[in-house]
Length: 286
Image (cartoon, rainbow, N blue to C red; front, side):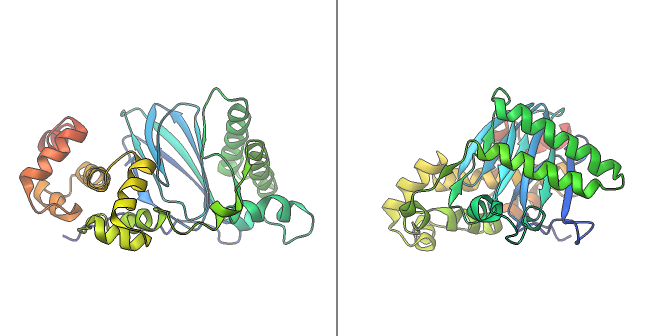
């Protein structure tokens, strides 16, 4: 049986003329968001419990009421830390917030956001003033999108713009040298790993992808992710292994080989270190 791995996501958008969709991630449905990226923007609302979230090279443990803003083409993932955890992911295309230059808002806010000339915070903690306002806005958006009364599209667009407007209150202009800084960025290897984490990758190869020296790559990667390349790849592989094991469609051996481990004993050791259970125990209890 062929096993499909996580990679670039082709997001399901029911109506391409109004490109938005809302996903309710909760137990017992698969409630893992594996590492992926897409062309859309996204708001994530932690509705219950807690999740370990990655956006780009940053990691946060987030809890009920916390919010995440994901810009276009940013790699991201979310893994629940308890069975009762749930979240809403509101995925929308940039066309919903653009106005083709009919007033100054596109030039002043939307285009700088999409081109990363301004930096909107990724994480909004529940105790921050803007978080309460944005969460309320997004939940109203969720409700009207679900009910779809006549004119709901206008309300959805208004809520999206409102949420981004409040997010802009904490935005910062990116320094020009940082905008143009291709050298020294580990983003290329993070994108590569989002599609190829199951394949071998040496530090030398990773550094080459980023066009920097191996020593400087190790320094940048550790500073950005808090992990070595091996630790980071193990984390991605074990997260994917967890997702596959939860389906109960594959054996432990199939999962191990699929996510990139040729040694079953080593896979078991890494899995236990990260999940406090062996793959067999995890399979039995989930």
